[in-house]
Length: 121
Image (cartoon, rainbow, N blue to C red; front, side, top):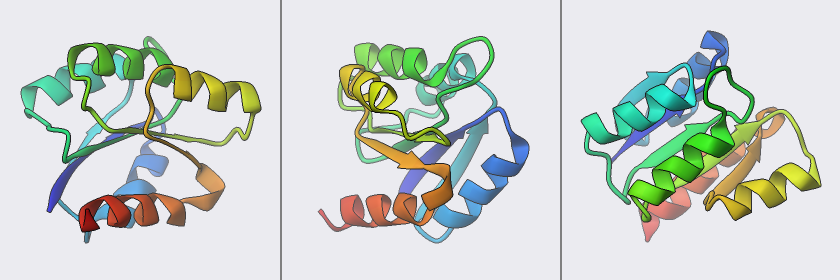
């Protein structure tokens, strides 16, 4: 079982994501922005076997910058950006900061699929 960190400024979206990953994760942590995500990642000693599910658009520190920070400190960190925007430039930006996945909020079932695939490795 893995630990999952959910990062989204919308409490309802965090609740939805928690429901999608509940059976796959032994522990689920939640944050409201990217700055908190970096702090919690370090404090909870998350590892490369764990996942961060992160929104892109958030106040203070957005998901792209937080992913960049996580990957610079912990190169093996696995971050999946979860967003409502299917924009090529955002997908490119996600790849450039080292995101391991990009899932649309309208297709949250893909989050479960991504985590299951990694669990089987």
